[in-house]
Each structure stands twice: as structure tokens, then as C-alpha cells.
Image (cartoon, rainbow over all chains, first blue to last red; front, top):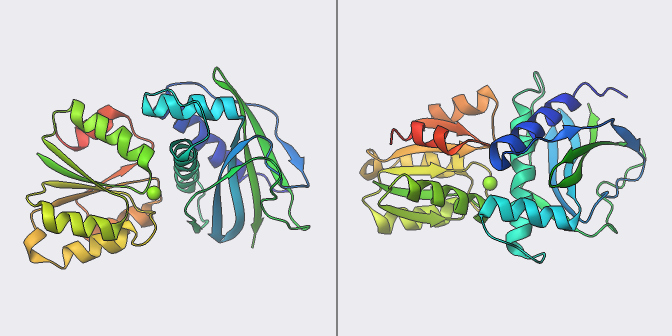
Length: 152
Length: 118
Ligand SMILES: [Mg+2]
């Protein structure tokens, strides 16, 4: 599996957490999974089309999603509500859009964000593509970036 | 200074609104897509600067930008793209279409302040 395209997404994730939340996100060893089911409770998903097709998801445990969006808004969110899903969707939009500038030679269009709550969803039910999962550690908790891409 | 803030994300609008208030911007008007932004622009002049997201439902930022630039009554309104779209061809496309400046998300409050020359 060619994973060189993954670095721009990692880079954009680090930069987004640093600039928007002022926290360090530390990437850990990536792993591959066959079933594109989100790892955690709340996932912001962006569809990609163009030179590569697929999805990029940023997946948070509920407690961390609440912390992240609370910090962004300067309020305390306690439940999964439209404010929370909007914030997680926008984080996904920023990370994926920002990664595009480092994907030299790839022309990609991104979809509007979708936010999935719960783990009983399959993102891209395709047998021919696997999902690369990059776990991240932060002081707010652990989350993952999940890239399911088929390059042309 | 009066600012029209256009972004489909309510989170992003709240973040930017707080920043603009801290910079002492007089009036901040919000819209969630290009179509709503056009209505707000028509009814809220004078507007000095439009902060404009690119990826939005109904009417995206680039389409809105082109529409505004067709109308001479808004020729003095500055339009700053404020988007996660980050590749050079995208920046070029927006500047060609009449954007005055381009800010890539994520950005710090300081970066926004500097761009707005406040
Ligand atoms: Mg947007």
C-alpha cells in the first residue's frame, strides 16, 4: 500500500490542533483496517474526488469531541447537539482542505462535511480499499484520522 | 468597519465573530451560504469587508464572489476568502475572480488581524 499521501493529512492535523486549540497532537504508529467503521463515537467525514477517491474521517470519543468543540467555542458543551456536530465537521473540513496544498500533483475536490454519530456505520463499503488509521494522542484525549483512498 | 461574515459552519462564524469583536469591528453580519450572503449584502450596505468561506451548500463562495463582482454598486467592498482550500491554483482562481485577499484555515487571531490591517 502506497502511504506517502498520508503525511500531508498528518501535517494538517498537527497544524489544525496547534492553531485552533493550542495543543500538540502526537501521531502514533498507523495501522490498516479492512472494515471502514469509525473507531470512535463522533466522526467528521469528508469525501474526496478527482485524482483520488474516498473519504477522510476524523474520529473522536464523545468526551473528547465535547472538549474540542467546547474549547473552540469558549463554552461548555455537555451533549451531542448541532453545535457539536458542526464543530467536528468544520475540524474535518479544515484538516482535509489544508492537506491538499501538500498533496503535490494531486487534484482533489472535497465534499461538505458529514458527521457520523455512533459506530454502527460503514463509511465506504468497498472490498477493494482498506482504511489507514492514524491514532493521535493529545492532552484532551486520543482520536484517530482514518483515510480510505483509492488513487487512480 | 462593517464586516459580512459568510461561512456555513456556525462554529467558524462564532470563532471569527469573537475575534472581530475583540478587534473592535463595529458591525458584524452573518450568513451561512452564498445566497443568504447576497440577501444580507443587499440589505446591509455599507459593508467594508466580506470574509468568505469557499465550501458551502446552496451557493459556494466562489460563485458568490463572481456574482458580487458583476455588480458595480459593490465594487468598493473588499472580499477576503477565508477557507481551508489551500492549493495555489485555488488561490489564483479566487484572486482572478476578484478576491482582494486570501486566508487559509486554520489561522490565528493575529493572522486575521494582520490581514484586516487592524
Ligand atoms: Mg465551509
